[in-house]
Image (tube, rainbow, N blue to C red; front, side, top):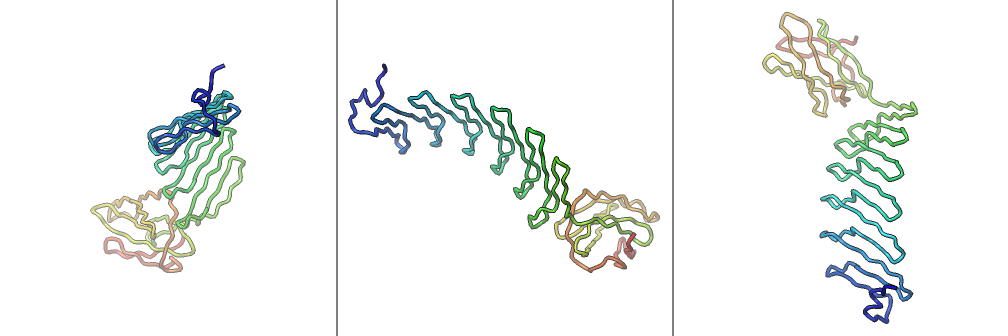
Length: 235
């Protein structure tokens, strides 16, 4: 029978340990002969563990020190993927289970899906509050601000979002393109100005929800485009 390290060194005091120059435990042994050992990467992260009972596990890390792969002697493994903010966007394990996630620019989870077919998605307002939720079972909770369509009295159509009854619309002319800026969020919808003789604007709304400040009602609101004044009326 192969001798343990403590037995080879004739150690009499237990538990017996060996550490590296950084204080990380490399080897541990008890008096009855049980032992375990570890290996580390250059960042001090454990990459291998094994013991006298035959069990072992190993792991791999990304450049940020996050575990991306783990495997053990029982045949189990799991792997992970992360976004640039260190959040897990994909997880999978040896039993066949997996899940994936998506996040918005504020780190809020907007989509989650699992290998069993279940999923859910969320939308948030500017304060981080969930305003829309939907899942794979057909449940929907929609607290998004409702869209209201308005028009200028001469027929030019503009579609905007409406929340708390506050509307603020500004028009700026750049050559032959009108830029419509809506709300505090800095949203800009580019619309094509066809011709001074035509009372129509083609627009691209992009499905954003905007909070507005201004008059409590847009009814009768006067705006000016190219020196011409138009009055907003509800459709």
